[in-house]
Image (tube, rainbow, N blue to C red; front, side, top):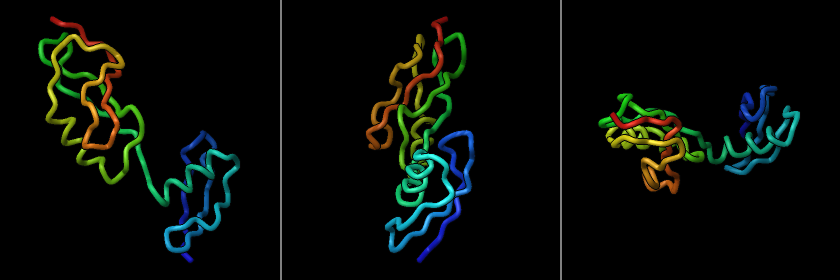
Length: 121
């Protein structure tokens, strides 16, 4: 049986969690003080996901870049591919918060959205 030690990032408590696995199946989760920790730990050892934040170049805007993020989590293994796609993207101003700038990034089913307004020059 494999044991993994994690620090939960589900809430500000930062619980130290121990997960016991048997061939990719979670057998037990210990150390969490809330249900968020249990859910986080199970997902983290079987299918880790992350929210990605970055910036995209803006053409003809009052700022050269716009901050962006994934609309929801993507598989951790796809982060570098996602970053390459974000890095190669160019958008034209104006950009509004919530605008979808890349649809279905890297075929993850998740969109890249703007997190800042950029006005046109």
